[in-house]
Image (cartoon, rainbow, N blue to C red; front, side):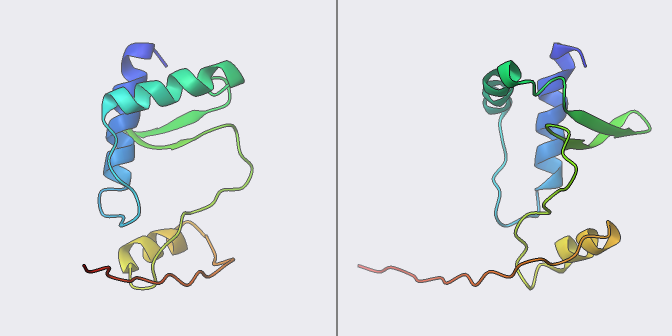
Length: 104
């Protein structure tokens, strides 16, 4: 992929993918550029793929992985859970997260 498209398309794809995810924050293009700069020497560009539908980027896989993790999904995050189920993902671990509000 030409360098001029790489950062903006990945940034837009990442931010669109995780816009309703409660555990990730959006990236700005400068942050993504640093990510690519850091991982290019270890082969990121040669072992990564971006997926397109009708010319629009819809996903990415880095370092040619054979198995993927779907990320941590809270029990009540039904949109994310339905997406995982549609891609034949299955639960392999549960995590218990505690929240405590610290007040002065």
